[in-house]
Length: 386
Image (cartoon, rainbow, N blue to C red):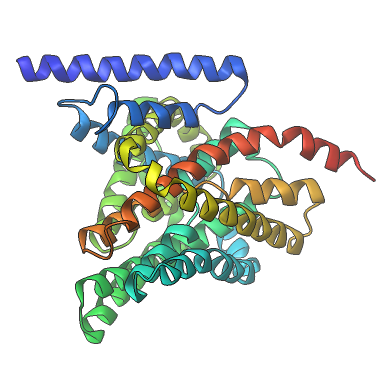
């Protein structure tokens, strides 16, 4: 009973604190994400008041938060729109890969960490945080903008690239043979292909199964299906986020609109927990020694992501203001990057890789939403120019 009481006290304090921080963010007119991250630092190892019993529960809640963020993002678009967007932005996806994987790989090689650590750092600097970007797009009302499908197609391209990259990295870190590594990658690709085909060809059957006039039943079915597919995808070495996103695009029309309304409060609750958990994973005492290097790497990554977004939006015929919004939307890093760094550190790639990656991601996870909010007046002026 004492354990349960402590759990409730900690969770209650965390959630109430997040509510206060969210209210403060609304009053100031900024995204609450940076404040949630700082709260995580305060409650984590090396923080002011480390949590005693609730961290495991918060970790699970954080995973659910990412799944719900990507599920609601997928509900904005149908399968046909996704495939069309992917085909039209494949070249931009390759540009994104080259421009943003290069800084991490080059940094690791210059530091003498070796080729395996370079592959890991390439992934750390490459992938945009789908969860944070989804939150930014929602908070700032950018979901309906013309550049948003371009941003989403790049995010999906990155997530699908991760479906290949993560098994390859795991094989390199474990020292697996070429054959075993190829089998792992093949399973991941087959899983993504099967889910895509099901979403494209049999989406109407999924809708018929999920549909219900009762909001409680509809919510249970949608969330249950998303968690089930996400878990299966994760088990088969594919991102759970990819699975949840594809469930979202399999649902469309009035059903998707109803699901979005029901999921919104649940998504916001667990999304806040995700950002807190992200901060919990970072020990504040390890930040100062790598802060300067992480800040330099973050600055380079901001430029490369901005260039990526501008290039992709320009190819899609988006106006100048939309190009800037697309680039800014791609800046945040988050869940994938920390997973990659965690894999590398667990395998003994290099002891400094973890703190560097965590500090780098923390900078961009906090600055990305702030930058999106701060550049809005500049974007308005750009849009007004003849």
